[in-house]
Length: 130
Image (cartoon, rainbow, N blue to C red; front, side, top):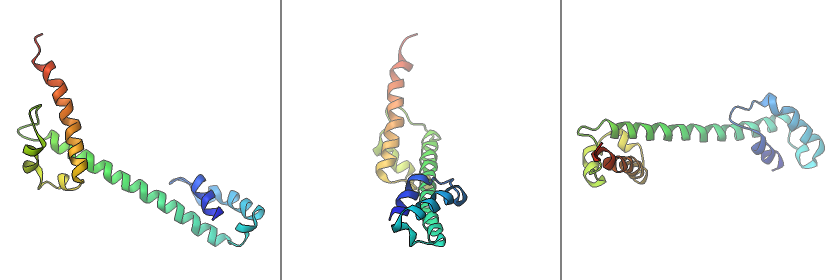
């Protein structure tokens, strides 16, 4: 309803109830559709909106950490990745690693391709005469 829409617009993951309670009360006073919701109900809606934002943020942090760990794994390979490396040859070397398993196949391959393209671009420069 209107209260949920309002809260979805103004609440961030850091917002406290105390920061929005006056605005919520003002909305309840001026909008008949919101008057039926008591303060406890408003607080529950706030907690629901805030909780969803926090869950999304936490999920994004987990993904960022998993991607970072996967890239670290690629950088730590021995022998290291080179411009001649391929996903088909790399995959059997790393598929058991938890950092590999933490990501979906499409994202693993995408991250490999991004790192590999940097190596390919650097390869001609490394072999060029000084």
